[in-house]
Length: 425
Image 1 (cartoon, rainbow, N blue to C red):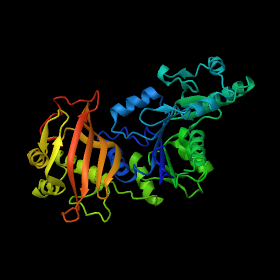
Image 2: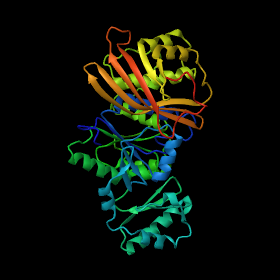
Image 3: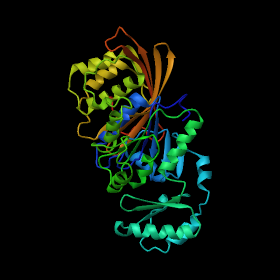
Image 4: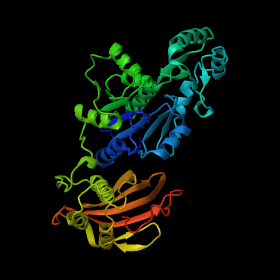
């Protein structure tokens, strides 16, 4: 939250599984479309919040599997944990708040009497969350009886049922909705309330998000029956909540446009040649550069000299690229080599995307852009910590030039033979 000097233009609070992440999309198309839009348009003045039922361990596993962005804030374990930034620094104030009237031992004692409840994996058991699996047919009866028993023991607890099988027991003050309310209160106290907040979900444990006053909400098209039922009973007349016609992250992009919260055309949806922007944005230039790079190697753009010429138009003739091995090469020579690599990744599930994009203005018309450049092919994934210098040049065809690219390997994600080639930019 400290990255912003004032209010966020937009704060997106999204569930992960089957909302931001589509597990039926092997190419991760909608997730990458959202990522490119966010890094291109919103990353510098907005906040991205992931709100998931996953524990920290399973969340980190998902990040290794999918081309996800690094959020500003992560709400984990069904709203019982709040962390900040890439380092996932915990919010101690939230922990202290949840400790009130909570006794995990009593929860375990009372649930032991229900044969219908099967404890989930140890990774999903957290200090303020006890998680079970329960058959859908008997779930409501279990919830009613268990609630009464916990109340008699003086425990102020909440039971959340979602996904047709997951039953989570939390402190009454916990949950995705309460965690978001806590964050909004915290931002307000700092004088930084978001201009707009968009919440996104697909299942029952997301319902609380839509109950927060003033937020916009999108239930993705693949939302589960339990969330749709909640909406019909509680919010069907609320014009700020929509049921998208698009799945997962594509539904989030749809909602940004529907509510007019800002631009919602992803660079991945733009046809080449790109229209010259009236107002130059370094973030947009970098994202489009690597989207085009990926499309060239996947043969998703026409094999045309105009693509190579465009890349040369936006790079300085005597500019250099320093690769992660420390080898310095001419930018234009590297683009010539890329020209011979057209379609070398076609049909190989190759993807390239940028994350953690930060810009620093170093002159009236010059910037340094730092970002993580990820590339994946199948199960192989590499990442280079990259910096790129860019200058405004109104006299050039595109109005700007990239003058220098410097890349080093992120620890643990150095290149392997499967992805190493001279085509890299």
